Image (cartoon, rainbow, N blue to C red; front, top):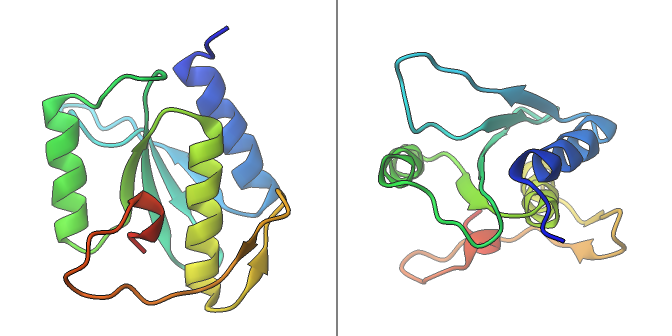
Length: 126
């Protein structure tokens, strides 16, 4: 059975709260297309996340907003599962901490420095 967008978002929010990441729900009246959540890290960083149903793409205005944020140096992504959102939050936590972090899933995340000019998948965009 497919999980709804809101149930996946709730799982990711629960995980964030357990890990002291503030999950702000955005409701910007009159400003459409902005990501659903802004996750604020204890170390000071942020992560913008747009949640979509499994297999669905972001609307054109949402893609535009994500691009705007990225051009200004923000980390912004579209996900279709709680697992993807949690993986992004873990990777961002490693980036902010600047050291190795062991995740709740048992994976080991290492900090890294992006190389200019290379194509990265969404986890390597940090």
